[in-house]
Length: 58
Image (cartoon, rainbow, N blue to C red; front, side):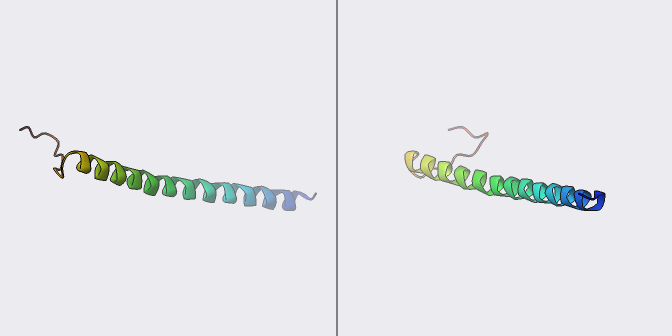
């Protein structure tokens, strides 16, 4: 292989890896928010519809 072709191939792999990592990070953010919403929804069912507000007491 010529040096220019090898460098271009390496750059392509680095760019592909960077894009895949960025997509996984963004996807993880949305999955975490979705799971948090599901847990909150389930907790509201068990709490008879009352919403938990941190720092307040009854």
